[in-house]
Length: 218
Image (cartoon, rainbow, N blue to C red):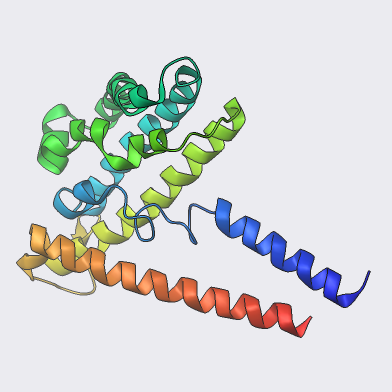
């Protein structure tokens, strides 16, 4: 096989990987801008990030699998409404799982109304806008990847806001004794998310440049 053919196949495989990668190259938060409401308002600590992420994991996977089945038999104009209704049903098991870990009062204090609002969040129901037929396994894998990407973003946002706003990390005193209360506000959420998104995009740009140089060398 010629070097040019090897190089083209390598570049093709890299591009295919980037299209399917929902953790780094197509992170649902830092790249696609999904699930921002919960991150900006409710996720101000690692604990709140964990609670939101558990709910997103359960709801996004269940909603995607069932939605993919249901949407085969209903008109396209009803897809978004159907996904939202399915997400409402998926909210119940997510809440039951969280109640095993925390009390209802602790959940309300950590994330407030933004947990049930996930049933209409773009992170959970955005796939309803894409007329793509998938198998059970494809739906599961896609939902899992997007949930992992969201979890990483939520953890980063929650960690930064907790360290800078409370001076703690997972509830224990942090090395950086921050007391910048602005990071615990909605404004601080915007600032944190904006800076992390810019950094994330820069890392993607560096990764693509590095891959391009590697392909040219070969």
